[in-house]
Length: 55
Length: 136
Image 1 (cartoon, chains in turn green, cyan):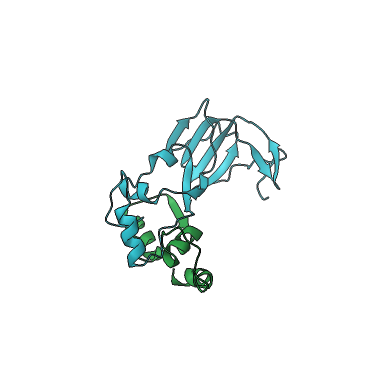
Image 2: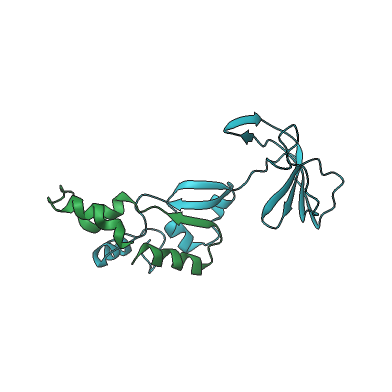
């Protein structure tokens, strides 16, 4: 699910307040590394940096 | 700023305000990042979605007039660190935020996307009190 999908969903739900979103660093880590409590693999920090491109 | 009087208040425009809030108080007036007035009792005229006038509007007539004695009137606050994504799915009105004056929410850490299949499954399986088929 993209962030845009989620925002469209909220709008369709009828949320009438203004809303916007940052892309959270925790979501980038969750996306690339998962929820495991380990150091990222050597290539993963770069993947996390590239991650917002998939918004 | 056009329309400002010597006290930094806006003069009423010629258009008739749609809403007049009477006796609004305790509005810190900020000009160039300096607080120029800590508290004032004034009328606020609203036209469409704009504050059209702030100041003495005691003679103005409007379709809706609200007595705000003892209350503060401000523009809507922006919550820059909102974590209400799931709450908004459960109740789109977000009264908890709205009643405190926040009219805009910016979602921050742990944003709702983008998610891949695994992170979607993780979020769906760890939902607490609020259940949703959409991972927030």
